[in-house]
Image 1 (spheres, one colour):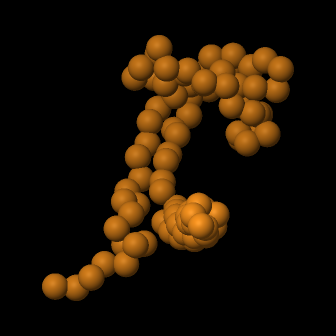
Image 2 (cartoon, one colour):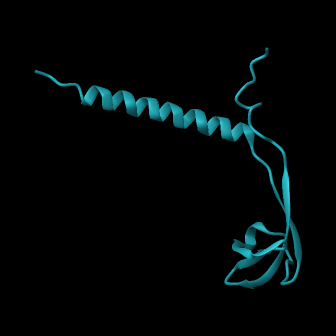
Image 3 (cartoon, helix red, strand yellow):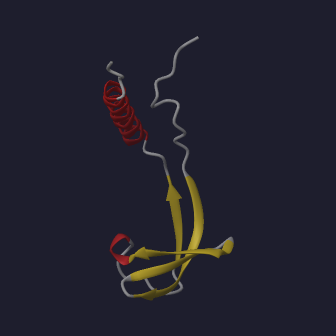
Length: 95
């Protein structure tokens, strides 16, 4: 049995959802999910296509970035190990 790398264990499937721009105010687009209109959120215009207007429909695509995920997990694990090591040396009882 082959052993998978951490990167290979991360789901990289793309998921998409339809949404529309309800309104634009104060540099933010209020985006509403088409299939669940009770779900809405503000999103900065600077990250959206130029010339976006109220009523425009969007396809939002989400994809896991496996390289970044693994790098951040490794960094957090190293920091946790370092903190645990520091805490263990601080809690030693000296008689």
